Image (cartoon, rainbow, N blue to C red; front, side, top):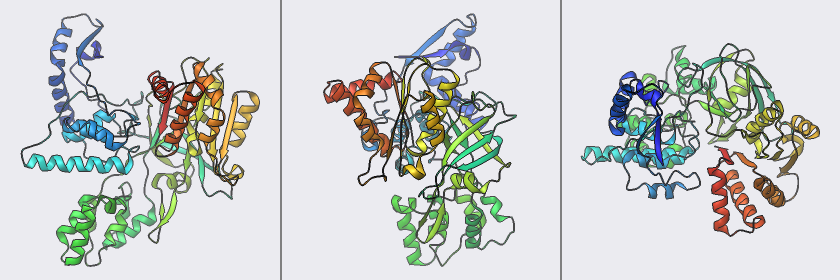
Length: 527
């Protein structure tokens, strides 16, 4: 397949890296020049200057095949497929392969940004989590060692970037929105605290489509910041303000190296070295864990600030349609809190949205467009939505959109959680949609309501014949939620349903599901 470039872009100065990409002007200019040289865009631009504007498209080099760019492949298999490729391609294989934009790039362009040195944050791939971060960290270390030995892996450029929202507000220039409300959705007997959060976008001109995500820049808990300041022996009254947007959730290699360089006590020095050498050990510690692990030395506060990163924005699936709620954006947020190693821990963004920000206060946000995860353009087509727990968020927006646009296609929701009494999120809204016919079918799976646990994939199997019928009628199938377990279980169930009710072999069912994905009829928003 040939890659095409809009001639209007080529008639201007070559600019492949967008202004919104997180590079300095010098880095952006260098990258644009590098890409232009690699793809021959300078010659294309020169040729374009002698043509009429809008003279069609120009074909450039054939698009490279990325066999690892398959979200169903496990990391080990992806890395094997990329083992003989250049350094940045290996980095790409370590990504989650969702092209979700959560990092501000696509998998390919994030990898190149790391490889070129333009991006130093190695933890932006939120769907890949620690697994991706560890793999990326190892590749960076290996490449650095090879560079010292004169054996660096080299780069290969063929890069696409993630989209930004159409307004002037972006990841690098977030909008100061206002919190309208944070309402608890779960009952008093629930083991969870899930909130419906409403945010005012008035004055921003921010637009979003259903299926998009909202990026939220969190701030840290005052108690945690104060504990870290105290551990450093800092006495300045405003010291915590310097930690407000720092990533306190993860100890860094730089922090461990500072202790290795400054510890005199032999046993503690060996302890720091062991932690640095063990990915599992350092990944299991936050900043306070680490700095309180060593009794013979306290890191100066100014040094600590140099050893920790800035917080990454958190992305939340949008749970509203602008057609129903103009000027607003709604989220479904599960508050995270737990005990570990004798300390009570809080999710940074979730507790901020649930309890730390008063109504009327500002929070910095931006819209992260999805890559195809949205309702079908053909409003007559049926859709099946599988969204247990907070995975229901985008499907609230889908239902609002389908109602507002008077879509004729049927809507089917699979929802699950622990207990129907306390965990049926948006119960009144869903039952209202069901009664009015906006929602054609509803199947629920509450795992703790009976002796044996029942999940959404079990309900899918029970309704397998009808699911296959909807798919054969051109239906779209959507999944939102946990990538590591739920999404995989749902995917397995979908394959089984296609094989059984389509009278197919396992291989034929696999091809059928692949075709659904290729036709953008099987889409996943997983994390």
